[in-house]
Length: 308
Image (cartoon, rainbow, N blue to C red):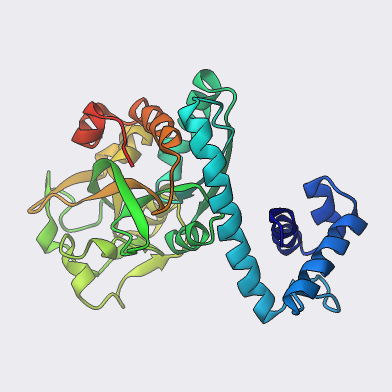
């Protein structure tokens, strides 16, 4: 069994096509197929069901491929550890980012890396939290930017910044005339929430502890769309602080601070516990510090570099 063979089965699983997988690996289809067959013979199993269209792994093949990804990830960690100590090029960063965070970071992150680290290739996947956690477990991502806690002991969380939540209300709401809103007075009635909602922050919002059947749930990740839904349909929603800089003066007039308590979310780098690319995290941290207002940055990150 070789790393090359493991690379090939991962590629076939990704493309579900032998020719496209071979092209991605820079080899001929016959070479790729031959080495996969040798691996199957060595393990005395069938990794791929070749009668299906598109090709798909067998149930045991899925387990083998999942382990192959971890082996390849750990092998790359050795190379990256040496590169870090020699301060060689970072190369590629496979970054995952939650849909509720991406709009505030990604545009300027691409710009920062292009200016300051043109040798870095950034591949980004924007998705829901559960999807990104699964991809971290399968070693398909190097790092993810998520709201924490993730409640996953196998992942390491490195706080980056904290932001407040605000309420965005339709003028027909009874408490619209208030300059601030009492968090404890919020209810599930007339609220619009994202599919992932804000209920991971149990204890901050009372409606998270009650029946949410009265809430209208938008299963997607666009806060901007959520605000437009409120504008058209009434009610209110909860928005993150970074959204304020992207809002018009009219939209800001519909926004109210929350207090008692002041709710918010912590955003962190999330990596596997065997992650070693410390220099990569610090480059990303410097980029984010140039994007996020200083007062929101995690105090320790303002003063010190990340140490794994």
